[in-house]
Amino acid sequence: MSVDRRKNLYNVMALVRGFMTTFHFMFVKKPTIQYPSIKKQHAPRFHGLHELRRYADGKERCIGCELCAISCPANAITVIGAENTPADRYSPGERFAARYEIDELRCIFCGLCEEACPTDAIVLTPRFEMADYRRGAFVYAKDRLLVPPEAGVGSAPDERPNGIPSDLGSVSHVKSTVDIATGYEATNRGTILKEQRRGLAG
Amino acid sequence: MNAAIAAVPLWVIVLIKSAILLLIVVTTFAYSMLAERKIMAWMQLRPGPNRVGPWGMMQPAADALKMMFKEDLTPNTADPLIYKLAPFISLITAMGTYAIIPFTGDSGGAYSVGDVNAGILFIFSLTSIGVYGISLAGWASGSKFPLLGSVRSTAQMISYELSMSMSVIGVLILTGSTSLAAIVNSQARVWFIVPQIVGFLIYLITAVAETNRAPFDLVEAETELVGGFHTEYSGLRFGLFFIAEYLNMITVSCLATLLFLGGWNPLFGPAGNPWIGLVWFLIKAGAFLFFYIWLRSTLPRLRYDRLMDFGWKVLLPVATLNLVVTAVIIAVRG
Image (cartoon, rainbow over all chains, first blue to last red; front, side, top):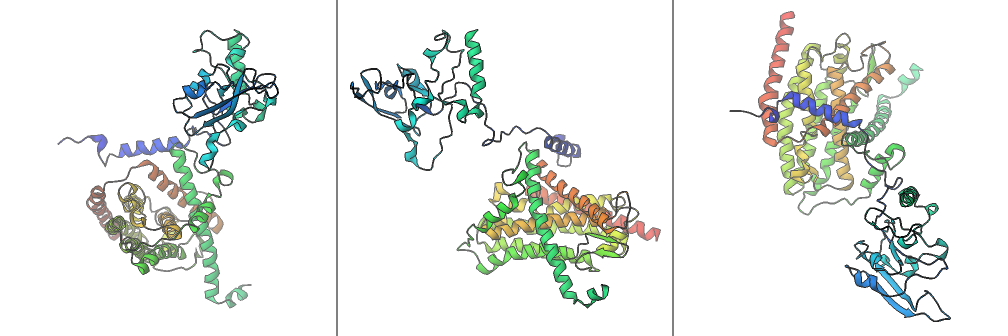
């Protein structure tokens, strides 16, 4: 009867090797990222929470065309458009989004809304910490999606210094109006942004 | 001063000593638990608990608080009296052993709460009663997994306690006494790990089985028996079992130190100072504790029949042989 030496209960050398392995691992550097205090750097094109952009003059980019809602595979977006009036003008075009709601619990963060948007109004930011205690809180309306006028215009593909790159696949764009100083420095977007710009210029 | 101390009744002194010791022992339990979690985490490439206080130092307090506020459940099918009593049997026997463990000593004698001249017998009888805690807990839970756990526990304890006692008797033959202080003092020149290396190894293995720790934790094998004998226990009562398990672990570490590693005898440097002796004792017992944690994170759990095979067919014959050889050598040398 042949016995596999490695599987033998009384193979002392195997025991010793096992003990040395665990002892060695005590001193190996741990790969854990101490999450709340240290945040991992996301991929530059990370799909996170949406935001609605504005033009430099403060007008909303969204024209209420509902293309995002149509393109959404999860039916997470609800848009109800309305006519701009000369006295009450929200966007440069004829129409604007009177209501714009995204159910972030339905959203699969695919970014199709962003691609469908003709005015680059809806974009996905790298923000991802959306936890809440109430389900209702995950329906984000304009009050939370629309960036405040003072936040600026952000960087959208058509506003890049060198125009739209022909090879979109190789260039990742960083898209958020949230300033680095306002608390998202941990995602290290500043560094990415700088690198992106360098890549685009060259 | 001495006269003043002599005037204090003995029971008051013992009470004060016990209170201080209890405090130290419970604190040691708390931090040995933290040490186990930390060391196991490091060996598994994790940082371990580090959120409560610096380096997670307040984790035991947080755990205790959590335990206290959990609901204390009693299953409908349980035998209420025994079910509620069992954790206390485990805990009291686990704590009782500390009454006679000498943590340090000098030529004058040992420093312990009570110096019992049959110390080793006292400890073994107490730990044997501790088995009742586990078996009764499993039986009184009125549930199948705890019952299986306690059946395993009883069988395992009986099998391994035989070999353990055998391995310890070798030391007793060499010393000619069952007093722990006498055993330590007779190791002043050479520690018993040298003449009793076989006994030491057997003790090392059986101690793990006695304390129901991995790789011999068949009693509470999570993967097979949910939680083993403490499946139905929750809250503070579960906590008591938990404390008892760790106290037993510390006990066997202390006992290994006393029996085989020369207790408070120093490896090098000056002897005779009780404080230095205490440091040596703690270092040795700490090394044992570390070994048990190391063992737990290294070896997988044994299959139950393998465990029994190993206990009866390997450990017991070797322990008996060791005992016979020791006895013969002592008899021949006079």
